[in-house]
Image (cartoon, rainbow, N blue to C red):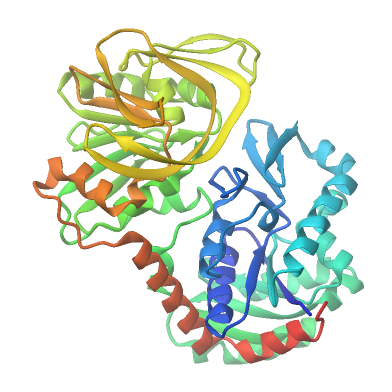
Length: 490
């Protein structure tokens, strides 16, 4: 029999994804077979599953917390925003695109796929820990909802509500959510968790009576603001607005333009884990600094749109000035495409049919096509003479236009990226390459003068998940959560 428990939030960025990861690890450490599940996710930070499908990056982290392989069924509906619509990915594969009217009209079909994936996970687990999206209080969107109460009412799953006290107004958020929900949905919520508390937790003691008086809900604990959370990958781009704290050993500064449709920005997490590396996400309206060691143009969900956005910011001028000074530039995926001579979209796949001039910093051209490459890849890196691995998620074919290029990374007989023979400029389609410790050390060697790195990135992730699980065991009522979930064993 499979037990299940759902976590919804009073809003976005209240800590649902990380909290679910911590609870998954805590239950896994108790010997249970646990699976994470998010019916619908909206994120351009995607991961690739072993069978070549796409899911939200947060669910990949949660699978890691469960010490199991990721699966497309852990996030059966993934929406990747691109302008006014979203690319719709169902059970790992792109099926089309649409706006809110699309989701309302297709709710039945999408919900059936969600329930199908949920049933598949039930067969292989003792516990399913479900994460909602956004907030159930967005009642104006209830008609098309399959992510929060639209799912919870269908499977009759007990739910806990997460409130973020760090942003203020947490009592009002909880009570307001209760008041906006119909009685049948109010009854599914069995309690709440207060997240990101700073200071003396006892100061919140009398607030529990106030919340219960208005909602009838009980507290399952107050979780303090935890440093280990900052060591885990963030799902939402809002995390990039907060910036990285400068380390005491900072020597290497890397600038990354904050593109409007930035994607897979967790590429930079392993670099941020290095004490002597500082990633400076340059916000729109600010020039790209020219006194940095390296500029990386990140991935993008809408490459042509972000190329135009980059020009609007004047960043193309900054990049060319930086290149004239001999500065090192790396492009990843969409950023790689932007570095080239041109990007063509003959079929208007991104909504920008035509031929667009690139940055002209790398002698390549790219043609976008409907076929999407989604796969895990183990590659040979010819510049750093090592192997590394990661994943590809991209549209388009890139070709060299001169002989002044050399293959940077290859897999089998396929070139994933090229480097200039004359300038320190290169690009690749490979995401996740910095997670490999040996590659990252060799990549940083030219800046730090040695190959030594004290960071085992994957081990540090595992340690942070264990630390998070321990904190959850300390501050939250795990026994009560287990009993609540088992009370509705499926």
